[in-house]
Image 1 (cartoon, rainbow, N blue to C red):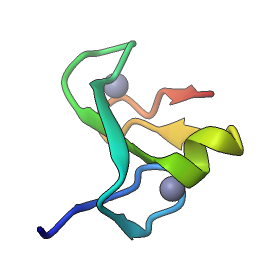
Image 2: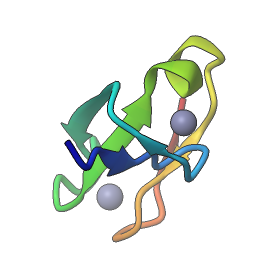
Image 3: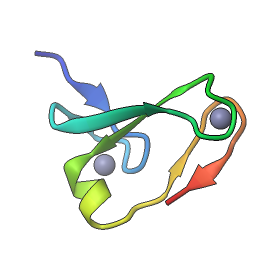
Image 4: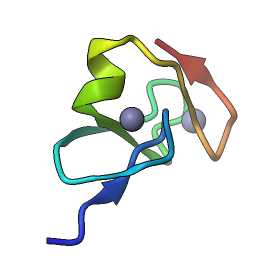
Length: 52
Ligand SMILES: [Zn+2]
Ligand SMILES: [Zn+2]
């Protein structure tokens, strides 16, 4: 299983949640469990929206 790169911390992870950018819905945001638990911010690669 290759996993995905977390949008918050940039690490490769196979435990993550994935969702569309709430602002533009064009990119998939990937967040590993660690980043989710520590409330790391993510940044959309398409519209540069930043969210908690
Ligand atoms: Zn992460
Ligand atoms: Zn976006």
